[in-house]
Length: 216
Image (tube, rainbow, N blue to C red; front, side, top):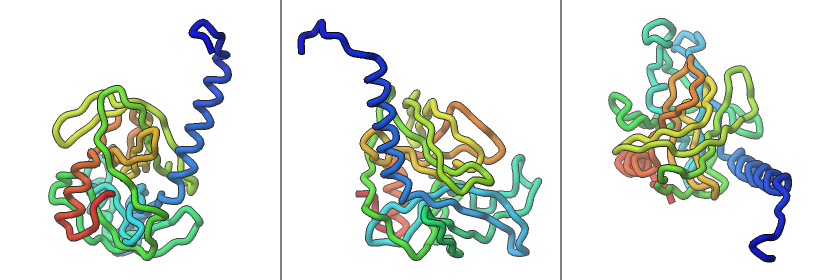
């Protein structure tokens, strides 16, 4: 094909859509919806999480969901008890193994009964990289995704230009190869176009310090 050969923009668009669907379909079996409630059974929020290791039943999510009490804080029941709903619809109570103090980094580890289909590879990202934010909107059991780019990064934090609906907190952000680049930080009660994420290297370090397998 010569450099001056015509390329139909519709073909490029279709190929991109097929790739987006491929990334989404491959990630869906990892995704977990998390229901939080108070010890008295009052609903306290809906979050996202994901399986990450093929030999461990641990679920990774956002640390700020533990004790979450509404937005602004103190306006709702405190999140103390958690239930996980897996991609195939199976639900079970899960236990918080570890949550970072003061949400630094913003990571929590919960214990379920299912390992990941395969171990996720964690990688660093650079400004301009294409990424996908995945999670669950409130009242919906099927996961969704939003495509964006890495807009900025500082030590311990990365921002991406993707939409994160209510409940996406704790969901994974992956690159075009389906490799983990971070966890969504965004708080409940907001729909934001500039999403803060905890980078994969911080997630990996927290997992190891907590006595769990790290990212692949």
